[in-house]
Length: 301
Ligand code: MG
Image (cartoon, rainbow, N blue to C red; front, side, top):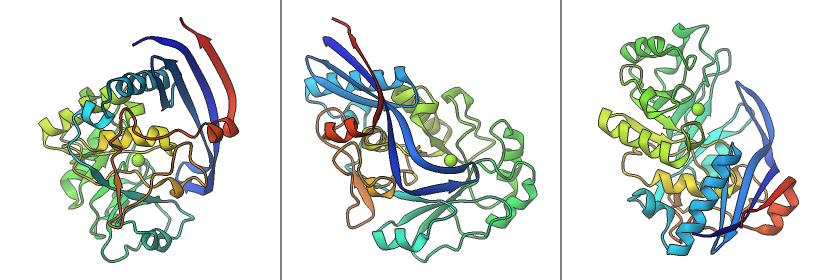
């Protein structure tokens, strides 16, 4: 596919409400967004410049061929169970009222243990905050959770293996998972796959495939992506080995105004996997322009 122009922007999009976790409070999402223009136009979002350009090039090429990203990756689902992640300052009832059936609570030692609303599939994410007090992870074991995510430090696989042997609740690793080769089935029962941490969509599919081989549950993780990155993550989440609800929520969980047409929950707390060519969503140029803080344009013809 011929590419004439590559445009790379940094965007800063305000969050609809501050998001507080053991790692601090986030008030805006800063992301790298790429657009390629040639035989077709394509968009990408990533934590890195190259990652954003790769996704935009793939989007353009799939749009040209009329193939959805989900089909290209081998996806099998038309919709996925959506999860709202509840930060320290959030009211879980609000998300239940919005229709979420899967909730992930951010937790840390010393903070109140979450109370789980009835009928909700619940997970917790400690982001490694129990590293200094692994014994205290047991306080989360009686909550009936689908998973306890990353209780200990990323490099503490032995510690996670001990917890896996001792606790009833499945241990899910997130920050520890940097590649398919880094998976260790002794240390976890489930894996959170963040494309941007494992080398993009191709790396994420490799981690997915390895999880299937090792009989590990898996889910797609989110990092406050805008609609561009989130559409790609939804396509990824439609692969058959992603057996847990994805850490992906509707656009209005984080943004008053998304960079794409809004992604919305259906009546069962699910998000549709975009079925159109490429990312399968319409990017809103006016909104992208409004939140762009820098832009670099290269003619590559
Ligand atoms: Mg996590």
